[in-house]
Amino acid sequence: QKEVEQNSGPLSVPEGAIASLNCTYSDRGSQSFFWYRQYSGKSPELIMFIYSNGDKEDGRFTAQLNKASQYVSLLIRDSQPSDSATYLCAARMDSSYKLIFGSGTRLLVRP
Amino acid sequence: GAVVSQHPSWVICKSGTSVKIECRSLDFQATTMFWYRQFPKQSLMLMATSNEGSKATYEQGVEKDKFLINHASLTLSTLTVTSAHPEDSSFYICSARDMLYEQYFGPGTRLTVT
Image (spheres, rainbow over the protein chains, first blue to last red):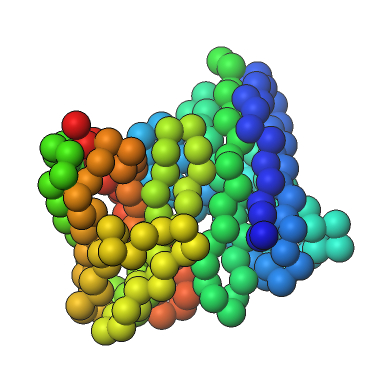
């Protein structure tokens, strides 16, 4: 059973703080990892993807991957109330291109 | 950027009827499209993978005779929910994969079966 695990939250942080979202995966064959943001009633929108160990930064967002620990994280710096949403972690085996989603972590950024 | 549309955005139908949902890639050719279902407060569950010109591949537990998928062109895939029941009420989302193997999601279709 290929699984992607996330804490459902909610994770509550004050505006301006760093939000840290975590994800673990069970299938060592997973090669690429994606973070999506989903607002209520909307479809997911891609924030970042990462496939190499280490950190990848894009604006206020940093994705971190540790394949040895099978762990992926997303850091959001200077969190804004508009960042309040559910964040979905997804793993992909590049042989099939199917995305396996975690259950999502709900983030609340308090003004 | 790559844009995927879905139609309709929401639909209400009576139990026992069939509903067709369209997924279109507007500015790129998609050899592969994926169909997901999402129940309230749950994650996206992949239902099937649709390849242009061939039969869809369904995930375990998804009834292929109930959820008919047709991928007749490089820009259009359809999902038909046959003999819909209230438990089929859900948010159906498609995604399309471009030539660089990135997936782009459509805006979703909310189906309510009464």
